[in-house]
Amino acid sequence: MKLVIGIVRPEKANDVLEALFRAEVCGISISRVQGHGGELDRVETYRGTTVKMGLADKVRFEIAVSEPFVEPTIDALCEGARTGEVGDGKIFVVPLERVVRIRTGETDNAAVTPVNA
Amino acid sequence: MTPGIDTGDTAWMLAATALVLLMTPALGLFYAGLVRGKNTLNTFMMCIASIAVAALTWALVGYSLAFDEGNGFIGGLGHAFLRDVTFEPREGSTIPHLLFMAFQATFCIITVALVSGAVVERMRFGAFLLFAALWSVAVYAVLAHWSFGGGWLIDNGALDFAGGVPVEMGSGFSALAAALVVGARKDYGRQALLPHNAVYVLLGAGLLWFGWFGFNGGSGFSTGNAGVLAFVNTLLTPAATLVAWFALDLVRGRQVTAIGAATAIIVGCVLITPAGGFISPGWAILLGAVGAIPSYAVIVLRPRTRVDETLDVLAAHGTAGMTGILFAGVFASASWNGVADGLLYGDAGTLGWQALAAVATPAYAFGMTWLLLRLVGAVLPLRADDRDQGIGMDVLEHGEEAYASGEGAILIEPDGARAAGALVTVP
Image 1 (cartoon, chains in turn cyan, yellow):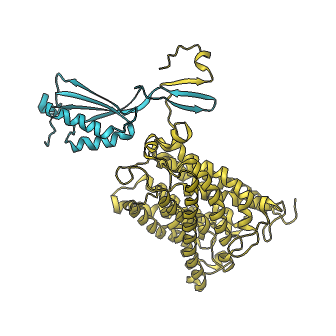
Image 2: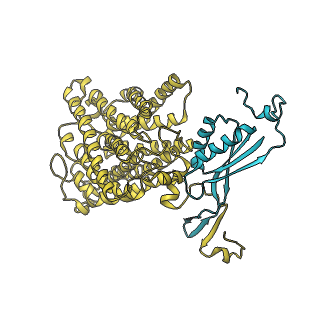
Image 3: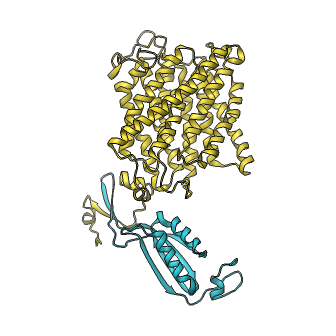
């Protein structure tokens, strides 16, 4: 089991979601985050105050998957999120120690397999 | 006091002018709520820019082309640069000519702002400014001449109390042309592009309704019967439209929607605009109820097409304006308005001219807007590319965000980082 974390552009979040669903990955959490990843900063002006926006809005996908789904999940994230310009985001894959489905008490692979799969 | 001026009429028209001007920021709020959060400011700014641009084009040439004597199609240039627009009342009026001009200016302004609803979230701001200037003269002033300023419609007895021709049908059918020329938003029809703040939408609609009492109530240019009738009808018609809209919502989706209610307020106000001072309060209620149906149908059917007429200006203004114009041709009664009877009260000729207005106005507005946007598109980029639309029009066009948190913002000017003595490592 792996936890796949994908950080992507907010405007690509829907494309990523579609790609994940096509790859039959359907256990997903997302959150809105802000971050800095080496892209050029935007300059904004509010009356006399000019600022450089050091943090860009991003959407973070967190997806816990069994081994056979790791590559399809990564592929889907790349496919949905890529524009080719700096700022497309990152994918982190980390090992998962335990997963528990709260409703049934199922653990690990059973817990990351969708109910109707 | 200049002779011929009535103090009561002038006082009311001063207030009514301010009421109508408020409608444009109100429309900005209504529209801003209907778009996505990253396009809030740009959408609102199109309305603010309409005030900036149209107030000036109106004073320079628009007013003259609409209200100076000319031919049946367009007015002359006798009042260009506000020449001879002074405290003396116009013939047949009891308010200063200057105030009459300002009241009409606010109509031109709101109409330009209405058209922006068709192209929000992708039209470039520079192109919109140029388009607004050209459109306010080539479309609005011409249509205003037809139905208010001595043109062929008013000359032949067509009834248009407060602007069903120039404002409502003018904006609605121009919006359709604008949506077609500028093209759909990125992802339109593929992804759900939802309103980001329904409270703005409701508040904007409420403020528009408030302003509309000046719009319709002021279009009698006095405190006389016609103005009072239009004022009261502006209360009754939208209320009836709301009830009808609730019913249509219930039939279609089993729930009454808030954004539907906001839309119904606008549709109701538009319905009564051409008919306000011409029909009885009873017929005004019927107009509100029956007139909801065609606009509701267009709102349901339009998103099934490829036409991204984004904020449904055609349904809310074009369709409802046309309904109101035709309704006035049937239900106008001289016993209420002292001007003309409709079909129901024995004058079929009125309805004939109403029908002609309902054909000629859309044709002219659509064709001329198409032409103007092709012209603007030849010199300026009309739309933001897909990448820029992804970033959002607020940051792209204005370098601001509606909902900036300030987290991660690093001061560049004034040298605040040093002035405040803060230790900032700029990445």
